[in-house]
Length: 171
Image (spheres, rainbow, N blue to C red):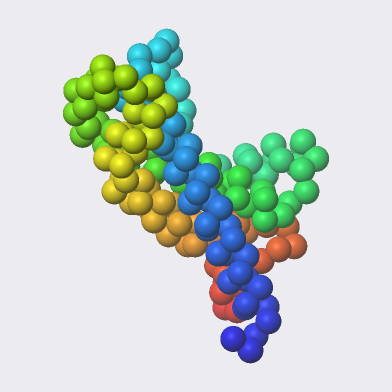
């Protein structure tokens, strides 16, 4: 704890990990719910595009994102690391939450709507409590992946440092 650089790196990593876990879980809820509940044109290609970072090497994703961000004039910072890590962790969140939403009994939602609840209150009062274990699992998985992520952080952090970058620099 006496090393100030280590404390700053740990603080940055925790800020990034909590942000990434929150954002990717929320995005995962929306994407998983849409993929399980609704039919729309282009559903398969859109879901394939969302899941693409799972099969692409992280180095390619990081370099492509670096080129895009620099061409847009976005300065490298913790914000760009969050963007990159959300891109990496969202497919994991979608995969976990898709299975959670698929296990729901559709009749519970229909019964709630028949009894006068709105779509939003049905989602908030019936669906979300039933998929809470999936939401927690998704958030924990995203948090863990984010804390461990080196390639994206190293490529997009600029002058900021995270715990994996600090540990690597000590080698």
